[in-house]
Amino acid sequence: MIDLDIDLLLRGASMLLLFVLLFVVAKYLKRLLTPYNIEQELTGDDNLAQATSLAGYYIGFTILFCGAYLGPSQGWLTDLVVVSGYTLLGLVLLNISRHLNDRFILHAFSVAAAIRDQHNQAAGVIQGANYIASALVVAGAIHGEGGGVATALVFYAIGQVALLLFSQLYEKLTPYRIQNEIEKGNLAAGLGFGGSMVALSIVIMASVNGDFVSWTYNLSWVAINILGVFLYLIVVRVFFDKVVISRDDLNKEIAHDRNVGAGLLEFAMAVSFASVLYFMIG
Image 1 (cartoon, helix red, strand yellow):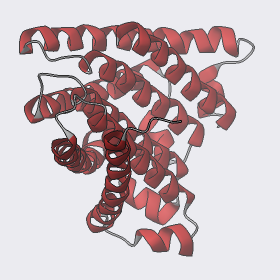
Image 2: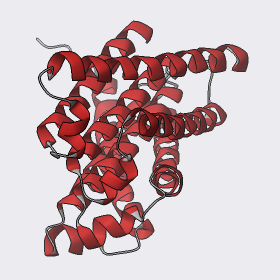
Image 3: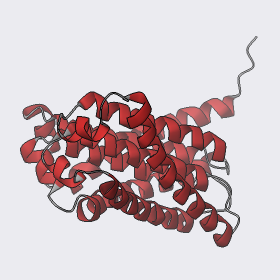
């Protein structure tokens, strides 16, 4: 006879219901903060760029929820309140990330206009990747013991600064201007850069998802890992260029040929190598 843990079943059922309710909240918050009709873009105009961005947003929301859920348990009812609070905080931060991305990372053009008016899939990929990247950092910060809202906010801010610095480094390492390529709708460039954003955040998540010891210890550990992953991702890109597609030049394939396959492989390589680091660090 199966021995059922009623409390465990009730907790699981209540968390699933909470996820559905918060998903609805995420949907309406996104609708409220978007300066155009999302439903019209998705179904009326069949806007794939908008769908890609929105997919990243919902994946980011799910990452936030899981990060809050996997934190230390404080009792059934308390867990419901804590998971709700952290997920809602994370949703606010995700929407702030969109504006930071537009203003500081892809500041040369309007990402919202590119997605809405031009159906720019590259811009949709970058915005979706930014949602996922930001969610990974916040989820890592709220996962361990000893932290709280303050640590989540600080590590979120560090993650945004790291994304900004990496975008500038990425711009200098490539012979093409990433913002120009994204503005022109180069999906290959969007995939390559978006993968690096997600990869960077995977490593940051690994460095912040442990227990909070002290500001000195945790900030030092995060800084070391950020510097390390900057170098690591550069090496990964060179490895991909010289080993995986050794017969051709990666930059030429992305900037001139707009080879979506090359961009997708760069995305996969960056995330794959970062995932290895995650399990080594975490």
